[in-house]
Amino acid sequence: MAKILVTDPIHEDALRKLEELGEVVVLEDADEEEIREHVRDADAWVVRSGTRVTRELIEEAKNLKVIARAGVGVDNIDVKAATERGIIVVNAPESSSISVAEHTMGLILALARKIPQADRSVRRGEWDRKRFMGVELAGKTLGLIGLGRIGQQVAKRAKAFEMEVTAYDPYIPEKVAEELGVELVDELEELLERADVVSIHVPLTEETEGMIGEEELKRMKSSAFLVNCARGKIVDEEALIKALKEGWIAGAALDVFAEEPPGEDHPLYELDNVVLTPHIGGSTGEAQRAAGLIVAREIERVLKG
Ligand code: NAD
Image (cartoon, rainbow, N blue to C red; front, side, top):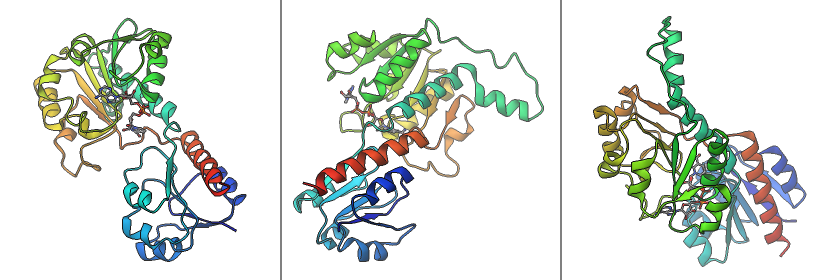
């Protein structure tokens, strides 16, 4: 019977599915020593973002055939070490696309209508309706940087809000954009100059790290908002803070940060024109269930050959 080791919490429906495939060992808050003990004879290993799957642990495993991240990305897994030993690494990149897209829409609405600031004000006993004059999304232009899985879901939702949607993504086929009614632009500069809301949906790569810096922020309209639900380092945080303080743009909403958590007295906390959430774009029951079930299916495929 195959042994399936689970070292981060996963959805119970996925656990049930895994139990059909073998003996499931769930470790909660395990230290490295405990994981090392259990990984030795495991056939499959399921993690989310909490466990660091290091070369050392991988080399300890004698039977391991598959490492599964029940979520998006594999940054906590030493994929090179796994590949060297013929261990397959799988994840569930599509599992949280809708959740992240919905969170993005939430952040856009929060910025447009100053919802978090208004909430704080009412709780202080104020009733200041003039301060919270907002803007409508209908008729405004959304500029998507990246039109992949999440970008496409955001596009659909923004269309329902009657926004014009443009996107900069040199790698996506024109047909994908056409079918969504999205206008693809060839230059990032054009998107930045035209958009009332710029939303980032590219992966963090050498090419995208620091993609939004001083020059790009200065190109944006002073009335525009920036939303980042992708990865913190895509935006130069220092430049963004300057842009927000000096009014180059009207506001920003961030689910991700260069360092997570951003630290106790981060300068962003002082600014009233930012909305901050703690990397929760994909944090819904639905996304977690989907991620668990997708990787359970992948594990089944590998274990059953
Ligand atoms: P995806 O791979 O489906 O789409 C990314 C798109 O970016 C692709 O279409 C690609 O062509 C495009 N792209 C790549 N480099 C580019 C560049 N230099 N300029 C313009 N476009 C470029 O990925 P996805 O599933 O849509 O996810 C996007 C990102 O969202 C992920 O990489 C991840 O960092 C982030 N994410 C965040 C959360 C969260 O909780 N906030 C959850 C899941 C994913």
